[in-house]
Length: 126
Image 1 (spheres, rainbow, N blue to C red):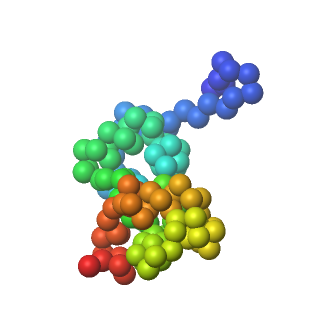
Image 2: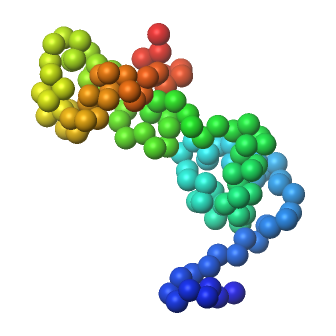
């Protein structure tokens, strides 16, 4: 089926309305922490809404804490290093230059506005 939008390809889900197989649920559980919902939906032949609803009903949380979050830009090691350097007296500007991270991000890290908690089970777990 073609889309009504010129130049746009429309993907029709081929599993629409069908029950979820155990393999599909297993894939969802594995992929949800590293893959966008839309990519999971495309892979499984499901709609975006179906993937979101199933993830919610399976109690799969894609908002993982720390570096395992699929939107994370900095490793737990980099975050902890920024905080350690700040605790030693370096300014956010110096840390930003050394770590090649934007100054605003360094400020948010060292003042715990982002990444308040380390990755559960990670090497920096206390």
